Length: 111
Image 1: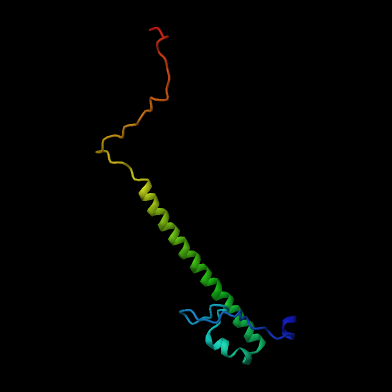
Image 2: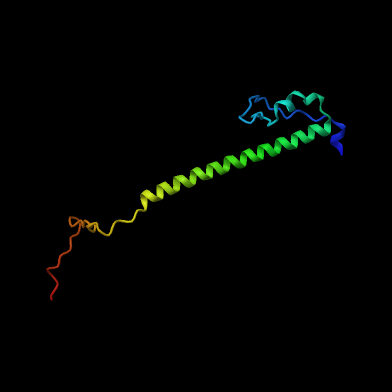
């Protein structure tokens, strides 16, 4: 494997802030993984990178699920407002017929 000949570069992208679980917002490493990066072997560094990729995927999936839940809530709220069936006890709505634009002359018809 060719990667064994080269040192594994740090996955740091310069966004060095921790989220609520203690993972870096940029590279998804834990504090210990960031601090001990230089002391890790190449094999251990590759394992850390794989874990970071898994953490990022989990976070992306959770964000998508949250967005879907919000979208579903918005759709159901909008549908309930727009598609309410009128009550059978309400009087029927009268349709307004605009007679000002109809120029029909019935004087020529014979009955």
